[in-house]
Length: 152
Image (cartoon, rainbow, N blue to C red):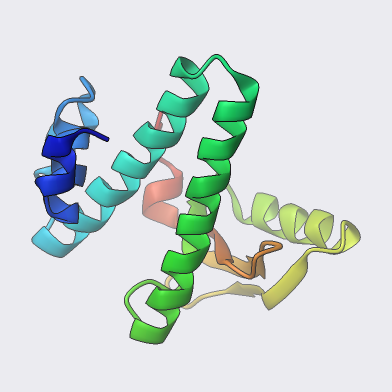
């Protein structure tokens, strides 16, 4: 982080990180409503930061320290967010209802904490919620419109 980065607000920093990534994602985000755009831009900037550690840091101990710092920041952010009710979980889109069921069973066999069991919703979506070792809640979701898109 440079002196210029420290003078930025967090919102300015993530905007700058996403804009300078060279990815078309940044431009695609412009079509989203303001709040969603801000959220996905922040998440994308985080992904870029972690990817940069993996791609650009050659000393394994430095890379491990940087990734540990990010892990701590994410855990603290979720703890604050849960109190503020701004962000209560992450979600992953899966390709089918069957895949959601299979993954829940795999997670149960592996001892992953299931927060909310598999459910098919009225809108045709299906999901379950689990928790990672730090207690961060993760939703595994089939959503008919999104799950059928080729996201590659």
